[in-house]
Amino acid sequence: MKPSLVVVGSTNIDMVIKANHLPAAGETILGGDFFMNPGGKGANQAVAAQRLGGNVTLVAKTGDDIFGKQSVQLFKDEGINTDLMVVDDINPSGVALITLDKMGENTIVVASGANATLSPGDVENASDAIANATVVMMQLEIPIETVEWVASLAKSNDVRVILNPAPACELPTSLFPKISIITPNEKEAEMLSGVAITDLDSATEAARIIRAKGVETVIITLGSKGAYISAGDISELVSAPEVEAVDTTAAGDVFNGALAVALSERKSLRDATFFACYAAALSVTKFGAQASAPSRQDVLAFVGNTGSSVSAKM
Image (cartoon, rainbow, N blue to C red; front, side, top):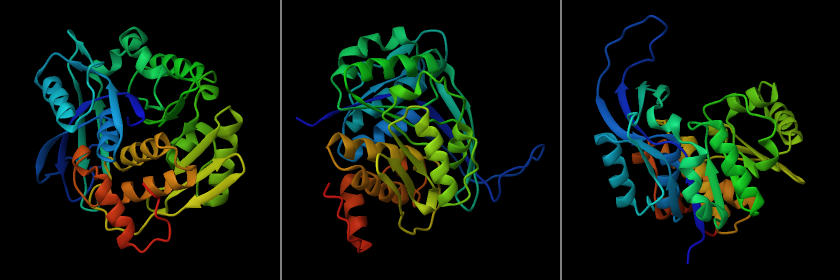
């Protein structure tokens, strides 16, 4: 049986408008294409992990509305276990409004809806799944008390916890020692460490400060440059392949999903990060959040086509 991976997090519907440039404060612009996609960091990471070969259970909360029902059906279609998802009878499903420019960059505003009410009580039914998982993965689009409750349960059962600290916010000091791996991007790492990341030296210093808070492993994602690992005696940059980006919306989510899958299969931290960098790079060549998440076969073919000397042996 495949190792189990539990994702506790958010699920949204993304409403996307493509435009030539991102609007400045107070500016109204005419956009182009409009489309709706399933999204939310928890859901994105769950879908990415499932497509990349994971055995995923999603713990999330939707509204009792058409968006929620559509989302659950899409997860089932992907093969994700939705038995532990919860329905909010009062609040609507989460929605994200996204503007996407011609360079593939984006701005995102989220109305959390039911995601903001996912409480420790809601995830209590998932206790056995969490305690018996190989990896538990979380983000910050759900209440922080729920994140900490899950992290405590996982740690007490020697389950590896990956926290993607997005959207960026201050974290309670009590949470850090319960996290096995934290995966901030440059801005999130700056908020957690107080160090602006401009080069490898500043990334190294930021990671050192974050690890001093009690986290075992820090992986700072650096976009097209790859990802910097700081763990034990490892301190190195894993480079990403060059691609032409069209949409970076869920690149970080794909990275985290790929990382979790590889680690759940007992790959080394280096090989798991390598696999995650290639999966994320491939995702930015397509539009959409979950729509851009590649399959395992696509990533391995991509690795082979780049002529990399590292096979990732996935």
